Amino acid sequence: MSPRCFADRLLETVESKRSHVVVGFDPALESLPPELVASRPREDYHCSEEWQAALYRDFLRPLAEALVSEAVAVKIQVAYFEALGGPGYKLYEELVAFCRELGYLVIADVKRGDIGSTAEAYATAHLDRTGADAITVNPYFGTDGVEPFLKRARDCGKGVFVLVKTSNPSSAEIQDVVLQGGEPLYARVAALVRQWGAGTEGEYGYCSVGAVVGGTHPEQGAWLRTVLPGVPFLVPGYGTQGARAEDIARVFDQTGSGAVVNSARAILYAYRSRPECSWLDAAVAEAREMRAALWRAAGRA
Amino acid sequence: MSPRCFADRLLETVESKRSHVVVGFDPALESLPPELVASRPREDYHCSEEWQAALYRDFLRPLAEALVSEAVAVKIQVAYFEALGGPGYKLYEELVAFCRELGYLVIADVKRGDIGSTAEAYATAHLDRTGADAITVNPYFGTDGVEPFLKRARDCGKGVFVLVKTSNPSSAEIQDVVLQGGEPLYARVAALVRQWGAGTEGEYGYCSVGAVVGGTHPEQGAWLRTVLPGVPFLVPGYGTQGARAEDIARVFDQTGSGAVVNSARAILYAYRSRPECSWLDAAVAEAREMRAALWRAAGRA
Image (cartoon, rainbow over all chains, first blue to last red; front, side, top):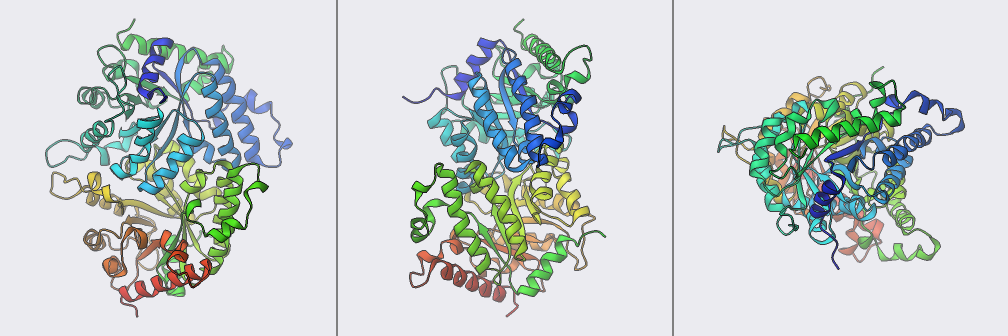
């Protein structure tokens, strides 16, 4: 029996949890709640990277447990774990498994891109081994650089989110460059994403090959929604990066689905703006507000 | 005292070793010499990833020692190590240190690209922590996504190789897209690379921000050389991917320098075409031939 396709699992989880929220695990030592840091004396550890990985574990596991009713997926930003070397890498793998057991879809936010043989190794590393449900990839190499990921989408029920229009301030320098036909480069990438999704269609009309569309670019997001029917969007940039629910209303389809929205820092470090709560309650309250705001913006409430 | 800039170290190593060769560490279990695999019985290991990482170590450390007169740099393709999880990641870090001790420049071939805060974490992971001399990066996010790497080039003597025109067959799909002014996208990326190098100039007129220019595209490589004076090239695609020394002669500057050329599989698995030698001698012979061919192609012999 072939596994359920990612697109169907994603859309069903949005419905069952009544949420479009993805929580981003982007841990940073300097932003952790001070009482949490104080609870693990540093001198217990020979290696400060092990100490830091242990702190990240203390922080992220309770968060994952507490947010399970609010968020459909966890997006794990591997960079913050790689920055801790071996102990960080081990924690990354542990968290993928832990979050999947809790019922989240897990997106390995690795943004890899390379020639075919190397992309195959990355697909092994971040989809086959860890068991993550989906991965983010960079399109710069073209088809042969994404094919190993597409194969997992067609054959193994995995999801692939291709960078189309990213949320950062400099994204226009390359992504918005105007092509001979007058359209921006990201439109060309969008056309490739449609091609790459062939053979991954699920029962709700969506493919398992999606697009990363920054929530900080509302007009581009709305336009991409019109030219990419059936392509699920992963929308970063909510919260700390500046996107609000009303900005991204048009990334949803007519049924109020087809997109999930990531917030990392605004949820993880919500304790800073909610001094009345514990850090864990603050994160839950923030995610709940985001969930409600997105549900309204999608025309669902 | 600020550290020596990467460009100067690279060019001086080319002169002192009389070589443009970069050896790519892209290990693959199925390609290792059979006698090496037979020397480590699998049943000694509970975890096959540890067994595989131990084999890669048995293979790559002697290779690094044997090739030190032939190659100026080692390019470590992190994907093949990530594919082994924790044990692989640990070996990657060990090899960076080991190869640096042997006198190689070490290029962490990670091709990362992300928003600024995440790029900072990647720079920490792959330059600060491991001590690698240089890194490969993907330009799709624009300036803020590469700035953390550029900062290490300006302040810490590190090198940055930005993907401009990659060696793989599908590279044209995005990289060769024609812009409004008639030039291909990779020309626009090349112009950004020139900007990004500002403040990293060394004493030989080269910057520490370089370009990845696939050896499989000789015409584009020659053109890029003319528009990017003072930008060092990292040229993949030699050997197994099909580029020959005569194809890439024009990536060198008028002095026969300014570019280094990577070969991975053709060196690592040279034993397959040289049954008369040991696997180690075969690799050395292959690297030596490549070195001589490039030295001639660069007009140096």
